[in-house]
Length: 124
Image (cartoon, rainbow, N blue to C red; front, top):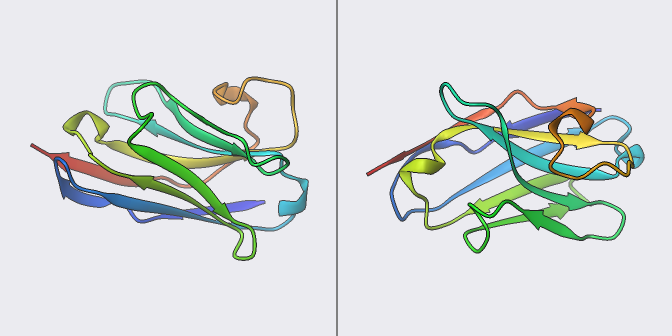
């Protein structure tokens, strides 16, 4: 499975961006797909995830109510719609995917596949 993320950029606080992650290869083997982010000097952290099996979604508390994760199965594309962006959202955003597992969706080490990351910068 290969993941290709795009859509990052520079935006003012309060603005919006939509990230995309195109998935190719054996996508039928995937269970959960998600977004993580890593700010300079910080550890990579969970942002949001969705289940390919039942469509359920999960969000970190810091983005709940502002970000929406979705998937277009026909296009094999994962999205992250980000609204009401804050300077604290500045980070490199990574899409990730994993085979079906019982591990918590926010467990970074449980993901099998990673995209290359896309930079999101929010100015104040």
